[in-house]
Image (cartoon, rainbow, N blue to C red):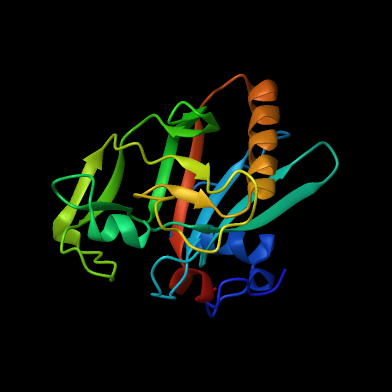
Length: 210
């Protein structure tokens, strides 16, 4: 797919092996046993450019015979609109890197379509100075249920700008890619009968250290 977003990190840089090594180095749990035991991982790149889909959403899992691996362009950051116009009085939410166990379930995004809806508390930074930059300050963190969903942008085409697509959610740029995610989620749910999914957010600097 190449570098669709102008950042230094390319989709082709990411393999299942170096992603697994990164997670292991961070001490994060990896689901290895059983078909459709899903690992959902976001990579926040070092590219500071606001309002573009310059991050990556990764899925890896086993079936009875193979290891499957997908990488999609996404954003792990809010769009420029909500950086300047926070919906929360404390500031715009930016998900803090970490592993959030069973914190999402298959539900709906704003009652419109199937998505992964936040179901347990997560930790966010609050950026409240209304400029173009992401302020990831440890003194501004909050933990709670904030509606940090994992969803798509446009329903019909790959989005180039975030704009209002994210006020802190993890948003996949291409609706076809998002369809793959939901199909895999539904298959996992059918196999495991557990509507609880773990999402791990890492940073490019951690990834490149492997």
